[in-house]
Image (cartoon, rainbow, N blue to C red; front, side, top):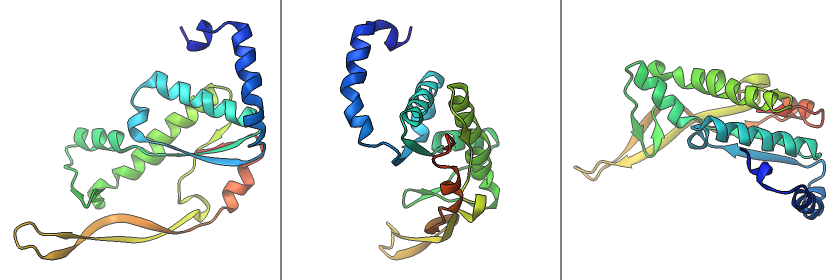
Length: 181
């Protein structure tokens, strides 16, 4: 039973009429929503999120969804017997763990696109590589060795910091009833 089944039609109408001025404030605005990997764990929660995204799009707001996938990456690496290493709070991503891109762009992204489409939206799955949307440079971090108290550089592998985001592709999608994910 969904929560809307517990609310009377009169209360639903009241809630919508009270929300209308707030929704009109964002008419035709683009809103970026970060959907974290930990929030994706439960299928029903993910489907409810997808319905909310479709609702935003149907109220003349242009949602752009940016998602994580840390737990899903950890699960796949464990399944493949690859040990994850972290330094300075970031996953070290070397050649063996390029599986990260596969999980994020292939599995997590396509699942979320599917949920949004199932909820009545028209989602388009993208990665930073599509249309050269995100240009990044190699991330550098330092850590202090607890034994020697000497600060040393950490090689995080393929981890990068964004330098430039080219909005050309996103601008082609936004405002055309399409939801970039």
